[in-house]
Image 1: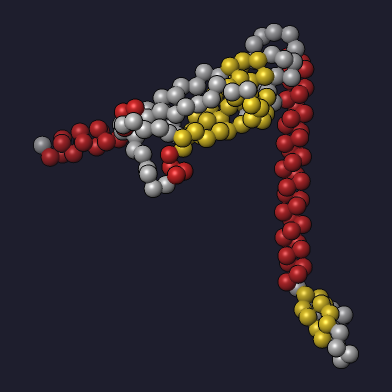
Image 2 (image 1 turned 120 degrees about the vertical axis):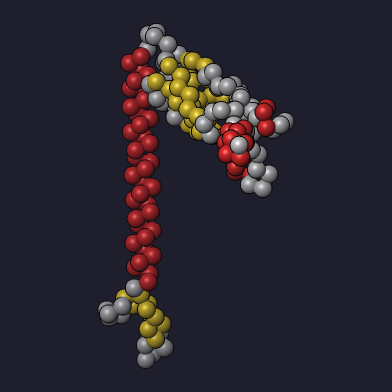
Amino acid sequence: MRLLILALSLFAISGCISYDYTNPFANLRLITYDSSPQGASLICNGEVKGYTPTSLYYEISMKDTDDASISPESCTAKWASGTSASYDVSPYIRNQPANQRYIAQRPDVEGYLVDAEFSLKVEQLNYAKQQAAAAKQQAEATEKISKKKRKIVIKDDGIIKRCRMGGTC
């Protein structure tokens, strides 16, 4: 009997959404807006948020544990050709995963080639940004190592120089 009561109480608890008042990030839900093809402008409430895929955080509002919801913005994917499609995002998060992905399918109208080419350009731009960030990070790490390998030497004439370890000044 105890086992049955324990099982039923665990079942009831597992279906509830808890609201953590101590951790501000625990009460956020991540929604990723994507499109097919990718690279469409994500426009939410008239404001451009970036190119798809783009992730936005929304705060959970809690009236009680049975009425957990978010207030997602009204968002639209707009491709380079001018074609657009709206996202149908559910505000109710009960029994939904913490991170959600919504994909706007491009309507089957003229201009697909323009949108596909733009999608490729956006992808190439993102790749170039990643490469530049990696190169910058590597240069900073190399500079940090280079600075550690130097020592300060005071010459007989009182001149202070920074010299490489094991090298001459």
